[in-house]
Length: 314
Length: 314
Image (tube, rainbow over all chains, first blue to last red; front, top):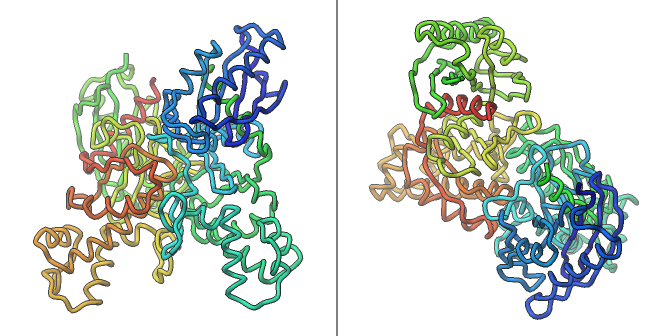
């Protein structure tokens, strides 16, 4: 009878790892560095060694382990093969096959942004919803779509790439993906800084943001203190995110949007700017979506990857 | 052992009905008028009477009927209750409950645009794909989203309302839904006529379209004959639809777009104008989506509603 699950989230600088019981309680949690040199050839052996050592230490028999879930920063197909993970130095990598050989227990693999959505649904801000979209406003914008409790991974593992929805015509700068006018260019942590600079350059209005290092948090702190320029920035940010959320809602009609990532540390005030624009753009039948904050922070990936394993057991 | 399924598609002027075997072969097919007077109170009794008469005529025992699938033009919740169907005169209507009482066999209910997607996947242009988006370019634009073989109905039955995705800033005219800049305002049969009139008014260029009743078919016939103005119209149409398809693909990464409805009678030439724009706007990892024509025409709804029943049997 399986009692424990390993959840692993492979990032560009560190690998987060956790042991969960089948109810989702954390038994232990730790990190190891990600060794990206030589095409990232050490990453999976390092993870396997750490897991195997932990199993010995805890004296877990293999039968007690339901499996290992692994979240990776790249598209993953249904056979657990990663097509490419630039941040890890990987080309095509059969993660499931390699890890099952190294650890001798079943392995499930998912894209990190998708898997985080599963984590937030299971134990985070999305609890109680079976149909939700996680929007991670970090350096870029990541996304994870869940319909009827199941991840939408997409035909080529590119499901939930909502940061690359086209939301703005006439943009002159290119997004990292090569297109112009992607949601990520306005709503991410770097996007809001770009927006802020444009607004600051456009007006002469005094603002506490002038001459400082602008961050998403600084903008929303200034909004709370009534800074007019900051409010203009927040309005433009909310307009574009609300429009993007509305596009998603017209396709999927999710019960909730769960918003995480660094920008979400600004808190519920984000929704005061996103929600009005959302309601202007959305198909009326889909306007009831709830907006909630993600709560698992950097642990969403280890929770979600554990849940990947649990879902395969059912 | 159940052998037959009834598929019903309730439209504003007629109700299409079919009997299918469990492999999806059509045993019989007929239509009855839709009596929308008095809040559409006769519609379901009329359908039930027609089905019951057919069962008697064919001497089907109730045990031989797997069920009745019904497609309706409105949002449907998971209990088979229609919230509102303007074209039928209906307010909140518990279709499943009423029909099960009237016919004595299990009933499944779905939104017509969604159900059509299921039909096209089962027996139409979408065969072989388990993850697809049906885009019906008719008077309006309907949509149906299928992920891993299952319909995405949405939290409030408004999944797949892709005609109401915002695709154009600065639009001054309102869509039927009340928003401005919806895909339906440009890509539907009426949308392309509107686009055509704008282009014809903007230039003095000679065109076979001048002084005629412009239709989608007329535009694409003129494109095939090399009419420059028609080509401009087709380019603007393709630009907007391609952009909309790209937005959907960035969220869902479907394996295929299946395009149906009156506008699709123009044929594969549509894709010559949609595909290039799609590729310019889409997230590169989702660009492999196939574009195919729907093949079931007005029968997509009866096929799909029969499939609704079949899916519940498994």
